[in-house]
Length: 81
Image (cartoon, rainbow, N blue to C red; front, side, top):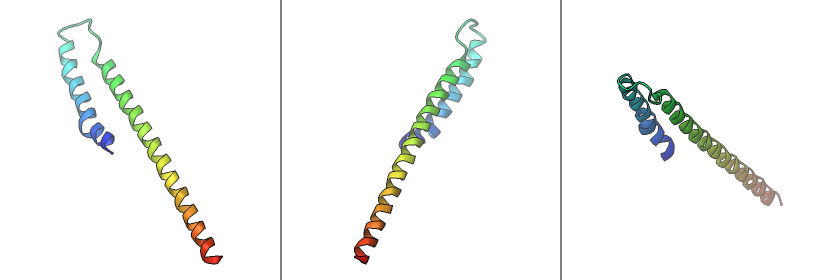
């Protein structure tokens, strides 16, 4: 959850703020790399990080559900046997 919180509270706002500020400065220095490229790269990295986090959470919850199912099945067997 720390990674998600950091992305929402720090990384995304900083990426957008830097883009807005840099866009203004590139008008004074033509020929430099467009700030849009950096913003796209930053957002891509953040998206990949969030997708990885979501996949990990899904996997953890699936294992937790399977474990609970086995527990309930085992409990039912021991009560009936």
